[in-house]
Length: 555
Image (cartoon, rainbow, N blue to C red; front, side, top):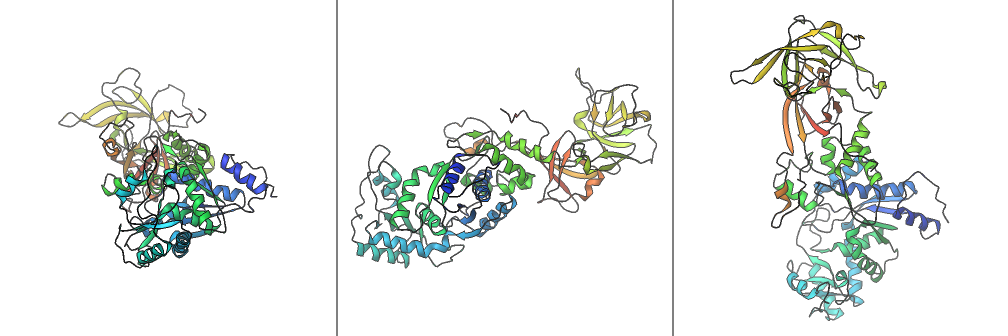
């Protein structure tokens, strides 16, 4: 018996099963796997499965494999293989073995032949539409295919001819012979091989018949010695077929399947098919668009692997499906970045301010903490001259009551600098405000201990003389949170305001910022230097998350 030490790891029903299997000697070592099909990019839902499999194996001194379930050449591509590897590594995990289902094709074929010899599989000529008609319903049993009673010899000959390329796509399939009256539709003679004359990313043109997922997956687990095949709840009804395949193909190792609730997020598309549609119809800027829930999209937006792992741990492993508020994910990126991200100032919608009584040509360097919550990060120097930029939204010519920012005659504090007072408003020919003339009080310098009077408004700013131009990309949820109407698709609920692109300025020390560097812009939020469009001549920042949220993690 293996004794599992009490750890700080969060308990869940799957972990409890694994621990019990280790302690009673049912298994000597836990072996898990993350088995994506390389037909798209991984999304945040996959991150939960990755964390469950890899962290469980690591905690209990087991092994975790990365396996590509590449049994459908019509949808799979080497591009997806590379992206999946990159995402798993980025999340911080190392696999103990890298496998491809396609490497087992010969073994799977031999096991299918064994099924035919045992009278447990047959070649069927029904079309896909006819098979649906024969399958029955949830309340009515199906009926046998007219080809169900072919002899073993005929089935072996037909199956070999299928492999040799003598049959057209869709002309024949190999079906398991189980029970057409089973209350579980998955057991009503499911298709286990189909014909597809297509080039496979790994095996080329070696094969023209390919195993179906429901047949291949349990064999892959058995071949690799997987002890706990962990999957999401939609596969629960397929567990009897999983067990049937392992038993009837007489596999030496017998794995077991366990299901947990998949991750569903509010206002988030979690279907690879739909995500692919968004990419192909150019609704988004590729799989790594920062509005996408793909791991590559979250990475480009600025999310960290630490935040995603903490999020996955917090939501836990449950037996029933539920919907998680996307604000919870935002909470964890804030928590991760608040001690890491340098503070700085950026102006997204610039309005020039001329401080008329500040000496012309004078440059003053002001010292400010890089991160007040983490003093060990040190300080930065900010230039100050008579011309600065503030936000357009921080000025109103005719403000409402309790408006404490700039307006004619009002005084505000500039963050890290001085008090300034608005004296004159400059407009263009169309009446638009284009410039403010203000005066400053040299005695009110930040850190000077000035206590003569107080102001209620504090504005961020950027020195105009040294400002670095920058592009800011602000994001809202891609999908509107509305109840779907009949006749509409998810594309009808795309948020037209999901992205806003602004041209502004940042502090001069930001000139050295590199792709994927993260910052907190005072009053605006956390931003990431975009790795796709940032160049030596242009800085592009993606909004990761706003500074505050109504989300309460304790509720």
